[in-house]
Length: 333
Ligand code: TRP
Image (cartoon, rainbow, N blue to C red; front, top):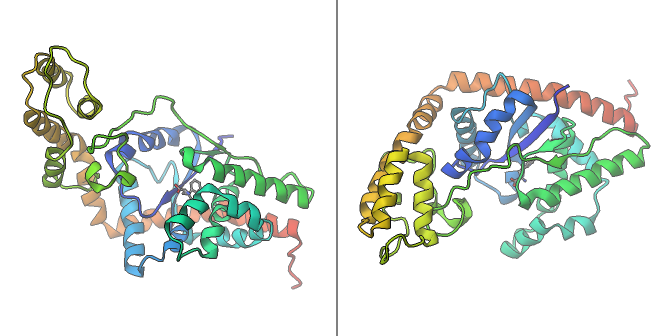
């Protein structure tokens, strides 16, 4: 039996190059080996009260981008969380078993409280319970998440084990963080520090949906320095970042050409950036045009999302039936 992977995608998340060459390329490979459930976590996003228009648009955009990037709806189950109401039902049951103290101690919760002290709603507090249910509903054992979500996974194990103990069953399995490949390519941001990521601001990210004009503008504005002053000098991080990006999207010859210019101090960063932008545009062209095509194909999207909902519902329905039986929610009629 294939192991089950569950991954929730924040519905606010427009994909950037970092996702595309990093986590997402792993998702695409994982589909072959695992029973994968990828879902858009639209219920989770309600904690921040998006407008109805924004919510529905972003959910659709995320589906489009994941499909464009290579998630195959035949191999994987890609669905929208709210299409599977069993998740919300399980969430109700599991909430009876999640305690205020442990929920308040969660780091992500404390961060949110600090950031938005006026919006400390119950949904935010119980966010980890809903996340646990996303995983438990499919008996997922592998969850491809980053460090910031480890604590939520630990809570998922706590809730599952507590349920098992309370009802004296061996029902829910333990889920653990999973990285498909250790060799995650690091995609630097354009702002000179660290990773490409939304938290570092839009200017640091090249989004898959960015038009070529936008890509050119962002790359030309990327942080650099005043240039090397000594032959073969070590590159400072901001410059190394540009070269790292080039390594991903450009040919070896191009990379070598600019390495040489750098090493003999005749590099002009404007030229490097121009080349980098053009190579990025070429590298992302297939996925950009696929995004275009899919977002205009309502029929196909409907079909895919419906298929995903059906596959997810089959798995979720079985779990809920069993959970009700375990809890003692048994029909009188
Ligand atoms: N909390 C995750 C994040 O912020 C999103 C998420 C929701 C998730 N439910 C999940 C991830 C279940 C993995 C499994 O990125």
